[in-house]
Image (cartoon, rainbow, N blue to C red; front, side, top):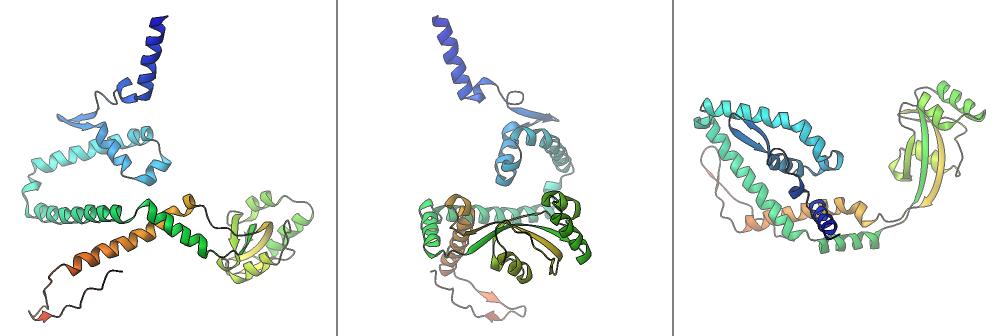
Length: 277
């Protein structure tokens, strides 16, 4: 019985810490190219550095697709070293520029991390909620066709009991679903028609816009509400990041001594750096 509990405890530890249960690659190595190792950690770091990629592809899938690319990159790098590319003036000049760019990037990322906090995001979200003005929203579908004759044909089929979604797949140049929208985000002709209709109603006549002829179905009507913080947080962080970057640059500029010269060697007067807000 005691052995059973020991085995169960060991299994629990291994499941809680997969790294100890099974080493990734061959002892952490993904490939060896002419004696040089490519580690699983390198590939994982590349995966982690791309948040958008992480949301679409698992690391296992990324690893399987990226491994050959890492190997090819290592082979080309080794050939470049053999050819003494790293000793050329071109390499050294581009390396100096790359170092500057990397230093700027890391510095600004550090400044943003200091200036854009969860508290700042919450404060901006609260301001958004306070100033939010509710508007009427319509949820609609449409069937977009190139001619009035086609639109009349669709409406005739709908009047005979045709299924809107099936007809949309057959006729429409665009996806049928439009989701919820306010009046000001649509072109006037479409908006005026959609917002004059009742819930469940289908347009009795084609609606002409610059995109073609629309047959509209209104699925719901409601008053808009503020977005949840988790849904709008990326936009809030982007706004705060822009402000933090501008402030960081202004602070650095105010503490810098700059001398500028024209092509003919004359001094160019510096305008005073704008005060940080």
